[in-house]
Image 1 (tube, helix red, strand yellow):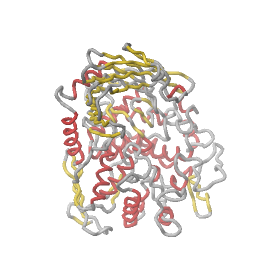
Image 2 (tube, rainbow, N blue to C red; image 1 turned 60 degrees about the vertical axis):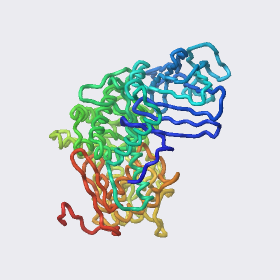
Image 3 (cartoon, rainbow, N blue to C red; image 1 turned 120 degrees about the vertical axis):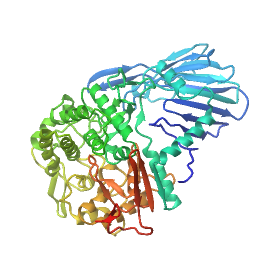
Image 4 (cartoon, rainbow, N blue to C red; image 1 turned 180 degrees about the vertical axis):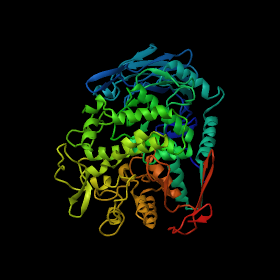
Length: 618
């Protein structure tokens, strides 16, 4: 395993690990900060003597609305300065994609600090005061620099050290977090040393042999990205801020409340890797999502930001996520409670499903216009209250298959029989005569007509993708797909590999079609899967700033690369089976609590013709 440099990394940790980061502004100062779950030692070093400032700037209030109704008003940020005690207690409102209220007492460790506060502008300083609140935040509709409240502390020291404790529930909880995680005598260097040891141990959950230095660096970078989510949202005393804007306490057996779930992205690769490598965390994550759904009127939001629903994207990704967890052996969550809740939302219309608020990108309904969907067998483009009727149909078919399969594992035959026919409703938006060259997924109106005009490169009826991409989103039912269609999908007319920028062909930079290289396996042509996976992994994943194909989406694209390098990929998001391709490394060891999975490949052989299982060729 290569030496890992954490000198210039930055991120939020989901596990109780520590993470150092250094940056230089080129303006005569340097900083080094380290973080645990909810505490961060921070040191600012100045090149010259004089008066130096540390500024804490806070946003204004956030008003949270669902449809036309205001459901919460989170007060403006503010702070209280404790000059004698060398401490600052700020609180802040945040609403980027969702509501949360982080609070963080800050202890400033330096000699003779001088404190000031301000409201709205840095020019409006108020010497001698100890409190500040109010001002404007970005959510007020005015995005003007300096509009907020805050304060600063000034020092004569060239080195200023602070310890910051963070909580989403209260200042008191932040203080507890501050005192619980780092010993009083610990400094930035000792915590940074612990960070290296902790990350080194975590990244050794998969060890590899062989490959080039760049391949190994790319692999461990992807694995590192995959471990950055989900994020801890509970305090050391077990309290957390719920989606109902109330403080809750973890139930017995639930170790950690997690936040941040970009479901539309993550259910395709990231959640399976999480279940494979950290099944205990996966179970706590499942329970966390169930908790938030219960507090949200039973609705499972598809994109949870910390603790709040944002409704971003489309479909019902919680269903394949939790069904996949269960299929992969995860049991440490309220299995039956979560299953019943998801089935209820899939079969009983909810008022939010009739709302156009936030559409198209943030439609409120978990199952938009469910009654119409059940009547027609597809999501109509003109009345679905969703982001693309064809895309919604495909996503819901995936979710219904997941619930039906989960039901059969639980012995719930009635639910399985009800939902399994709906898994094939993707056929209702497949137009076999869409083009002279062949059929495609195509949006339909409530009267049954196809939306016209049609182009396979158009995104009408789809979310962040084209018909050409979405047509292959039937992982659970690929028997009708033609190998010739796949060949044209992955290659340009000149025979070169398609790597994005062409709506007619494979796009490795976004999630709807990232599973398609493995579909050749279902068509009896596994060597084409091996060839295509290797080509995409080498062409669009590299070291350096351009080494990721687009947004990583909370580790999803990185998880794709980890699976590709190991020579496997989830066949269906809600099941445990893996489709196989040729590994990129001579050997890999996947270390789990119940044993080690060893993956081997013959050196210098890219394409496998047979698969030895436990030394038996089948």
